[in-house]
Length: 141
Image (cartoon, rainbow, N blue to C red):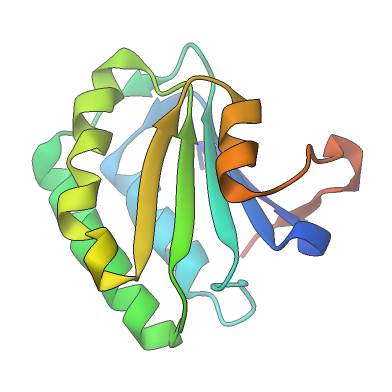
């Protein structure tokens, strides 16, 4: 798996760190994490990326993932709009992430997605304080 999932329960925040490569298998595994019964589906998310990550997906893969992610939100019964912040998105991934709001329009009140240059900007948008890396709980299946 080329991503880690860590939790900050105090701030109701999921931090995803994408490493090495971003592939269709990784997105499928990511959905498995979101669908796990003990995953806190009502937490906001921050996506961070290793600067050397290889992007091995295209818009078609992202469209499929977006549809399944929306289905997951509905299945989990999330009753408020979640926010998902993408921090320092690698150039090859930016155009792909930019299409996500088409699948999750703010008017739907399910998932709001924004990109940021820095973690501080993302935390500010989410209304969260900086987190203590050592205190984060690793979530795994």
